[in-house]
Image (cartoon, rainbow over all chains, first blue to last red; front, side, top):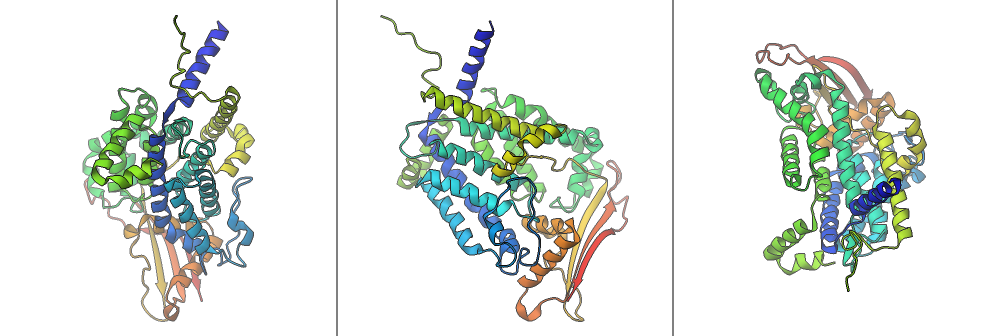
Length: 303
Length: 167
């Protein structure tokens, strides 16, 4: 009996993490993720140069911050006195991202991207937000997958576990975000979104008019909680509801992007969502792109 | 002759069992570590995995927008050269882009952070016209109750924290 249950558990585990997908699907993820990282480092350039650059915050005398044991940074070696050789590191980061996108030395490139991303972000005493945490997490998981050969060229079928880890991470983000929210009275009372949007540090516009629409605010507040605590974590695993849940999530994030100043958030969340696409979805995307752009897309995604 | 197929043999990978077991152990450890980081009341368990979380950069803590209050926040940053009128380097805080917003709000973390921020900001000004004074102010104002008439509460922002620097 116990043996049977253990066997069934292993079979489920095996099917969940070690199913295979087409190399095309993984290449699609790899190229899109690299494109996002390229955008991310361009978007974050001001922060990184303001912190590490000539006469930046580091050179202005800020002590090297250590938050957790073994939290490393290549830049800790030449902190404060000599300054960080910021341009070469920045160029190296973008170069490795380009190599990863094109499928050249994917293992080494993914490892370099993770080391550099952690090196840039770990010591940042100012300017980090949840989106940066997510990028750091994603580069590590993608690096693990790359080391196991999941993003390498030439493979026909590859294991899906790196995408599963990204899926589980997004589920944890939504669920625990909901758990933390529900601990506060404004969220339980259904008024939290009104106060979040009413804070001019976050709201893109003046949302004072929302005070006159309490039911609308309650609907959006409870809708957010429902999505984070139940809709996404539970229903995204039901194959027939997957598309509906993902489309709801996209709508939620487009709403956040339109109303709140959390610019880095939408891109990094989109990368998590990509991990939920099946090989059939990728085949359809590639076919559509191939129709639109012809040889170039086919050549990149065939790698 | 019939061939008995192993369940899922056609869809799961055919990698060597020992490799699959090793990856499974690594996945389990990773999931345990991030769960320990996420569960609010698991400090002792969390300490076990701190080295892994620190090394891999898997820091969790998804508290964004959980703590809201009936208080609106505004940040004002002013720079001044000589006897000129004060200017706002990035404009009013409502117009700050996300990356500037993140940096300026974190500058309130401590006196040391604020002073390092002022130093770096001064260096980014054109050399001929660097400000000789900065002031960074955190202000709050009550937000009207949900359901109240718009404009029912029109009090001004009140400063709660301030850092400044002169050269």
